[in-house]
Length: 434
Image (cartoon, rainbow, N blue to C red; front, side, top):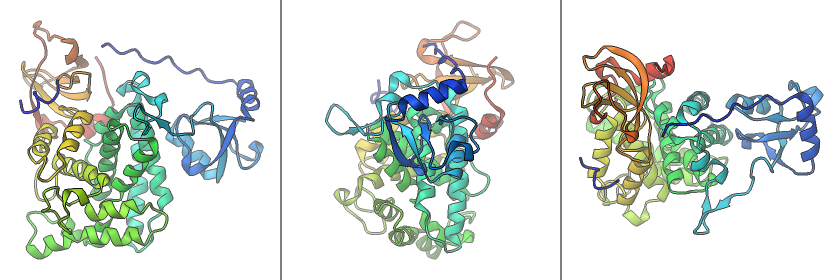
């Protein structure tokens, strides 16, 4: 296989968190009151502990003094009532960490040793992505109507994605396989943001850098809000005039973001440059490799992958593995070679959400990666004759065997919709094991 030369465990569920009694919460609030920091509610994250509001607790809707932020819904609840809060920074590190090279790195409290199982993160990631999808859909509609980009909304949507990816990136990669029936540009933007953040994490970028690239990726196609839906949704190939108009979305996006003070300036650079190529044949400026911003190089790879693996008005989707082969074939010409390899390493040769067929004819969906990139964990859903089977997880890295005693091996991959399997419908129905 093309990637063989590139890349050469029974999970334990974390103990259930016990509900904190009211007295314990009050005691903890008093104990940590001299160790807290004031932050904007827009910077709230899952995992933080709120010790003080910007108004008396008794005037809020919260039952107890002291609030642990456990879900994206908790974040929204606080944001609805407050402008800023005080958080216990002994419980959640507020300062960026450094890696071995002295460069900013990801928060170690979310490192590989503490990564939660993908099964446990999927529900939270689904909630985060749903909230982010609604936020970006509403934002794009506002922009289409002439409003300015609301940087706070974008940052809020991205922050939740970063936190989920730090806990387990496979859950977010899985969710990029769910194709939207409406608001395709918004779903595509969310997918590209998630994939870009996953890659940034694999590059050991800091939390702040992951947030920044997420914002850039979320807004990379904002210029399409200036193009008619008739052109964007056209079935079949575009004529020369329509193609030129679509390509102008990079200019429209730059202009929209340059006029927006609430969004980092780098977002305009990415919107302008994400269709440039390292061989100098991209658009709109035919930039040389050294002139293309690093974030734009990363976003261009994530953007191309998501475009290829989701159905477009002018063509059907291809399988994730086939899309990775396309990216690999265009390394050094369309895409940065090192970043292509890092992207493949980050999401896996068989990315979560991929439909895979085994040598014995059984069919499943990849659940998560393992240390062996060629041997993921797979949810088996169809037997060798294509009939539904009792769903169970097989771990190819552990050499799990089928009913005949043969070791499971992946034969090939398929695009979404093959065998009548829609990954989005499967996800919405929930994981059913056994």
